[in-house]
Length: 192
Image (cartoon, rainbow, N blue to C red; front, side):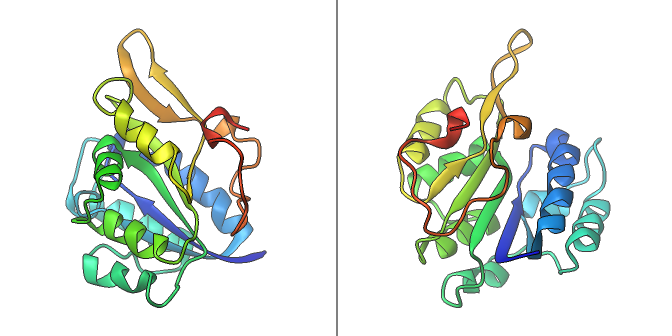
């Protein structure tokens, strides 16, 4: 198993949680340490897709670690260098907008800010209903920033949700094998 310590931050976009949990299952098979993190909404909101208690229990069962779901629990990620890579999946349009604007007022945005302090990679697996509308400029902002990497993404459903974008894990040529300090010549949104 790989030794890099992975943070796995889950935001809203509740309809994608089952797919994201499937990817988390793959991650815990590859990496020794995977630390689950959730946004406040994810940690405390029951939806038609499931209860927050069930989600938190599943995250803890998969990773073997307690879910970090408040700002004080994620702030030490930076000063203590707790992670080698941080995955945000699903990364909602709201979270992407806050990251692009430098707003740090949620668990996930604080985790990202703390992690970036150490110049380590953040992997974004987006899920946004307005990615091709109001959210496009925020995605573009993160695509050009150092230390941000995107899981390949595309339209969710061009007919019924023409502005919606979602991560396509099947298009990732090297899923979950980003090495710390690895450079890239172009954004990874194209699967290259």
